[in-house]
Image (cartoon, rainbow, N blue to C red; front, side, top):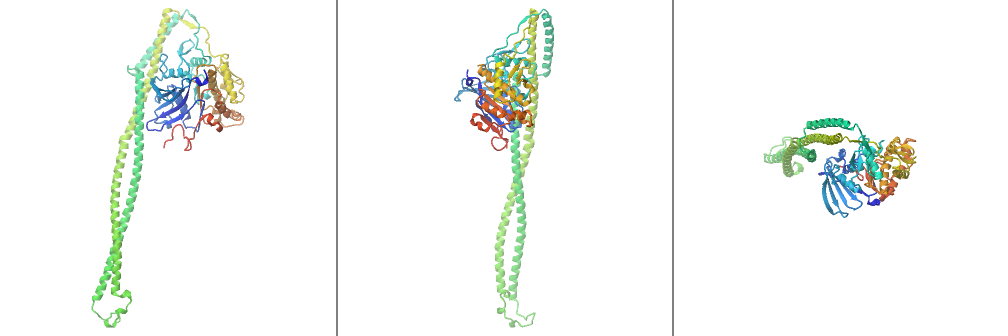
Length: 623
């Protein structure tokens, strides 16, 4: 099978939430680079992909993701070119799978359990295993030779690596859990060799009947204790899975209610701010109007005083004309000796009276204008007082609604969410205990059979395991990748049986600095994909790397590992070789470092700026 027919690749990842803008990233087969500033959602994106692949725990909550409720991952089947939308709630639970043909026409929809089950071919795990070319392989899970079926979570562990694991000193195929070490090694061996674990050679043991009896008593004691622990949780008799589904649905509903109430509070507070601004403007204008009104009233009094004075002047003139003639009180001259017609104009009674009348008419006109202005100010003041009253009432009602209705509703939703979280924790604990009880009962049944037959067998032959010889072809692929990246002093690459890890240039990968460890882990996973494709072995056909160039975060001290890697141009060769098709399949890199600008359309590139220029981050920036 050719590389372009193997497995699948991701076309798009979308996250949605009620009332929020859609967050989406588009991808394609080949090299995809998502780079840029820290805290823009890159590592969260990596966690979302792993969650869509069936991880039991949702990504850790980040501030930008608040209010978002579910994701949709579009998967492209390289063999049939069918498209599949994997929809999963961020609260977990079951998964909805929609199928489309290559033209986007809907072909069907179904629900799938998010958790792997060996006897259920309809789970999300079975779906991805089938796309990757796997059937239902089994691997050993312990040194006794007991086996279990492979889950897609086992495969995803060898295709998706986060920023913490990529620099770990543990071998890339191991999580560090002693309980899972055997199964993890066998899954890795399955991908490289393409063969399931073989059964160990066993022979009868004479004392096995007594051993089985003692083990049975111990297992029954443990089972009794687990039953008491389950009873102490008081979870009821209904199915724990159904209870968990109900709690998860309740949590989703509560989160929606909480977010809706929170948005109402934000909207109400925004309205309060607008109303307060309007109230301040109305009160400010009212103060101005009242000041003008007082000044205009004072002017009105001045006008009235002027009119009264002019009327007095006019009346005095009339009285002067009406007075009988007499001698001048100043010079004693008789009246006939005076010559009024020869007096100056401003001393003539008629002229003074006419001037007073003209001035009175002018003041009367001004007074009329003033009275109209006073009337307009009075009307405006009345309207402003009414507006002020309405605004104060609306503000009081809005404040009352926020404090007495919305905030209590938010608190109630938060408290109920805490109760549901506590209930969920109890149910999860009960499910774990229930699983332990099932395992203990199954173990007890096996021990009873062994005791009855007295023919128990214990493994004598050494299990296969990953050897240097069997891993040689895989190690060669890793070596070619590291050489293409121009890793300083990479040299020969072999797989060491004792450490179950790579030895690079005669030095164990784990003994290098975190920069080489990150590049070694990246080359390990990419080399595994390259080996599987070239050997026509099952593999998803994609690798997701979070921060493979972590070394460049360190200061470039002279002679340091970071300085050596930078001087060797590892960063440029890393991006260029992958863009040139060094590894067939899809490679998704999340990194702070930007790729060379001249790669152009050879890669799919998204740059998160954490600013108003370009794309802010995976999630749109909120106002």
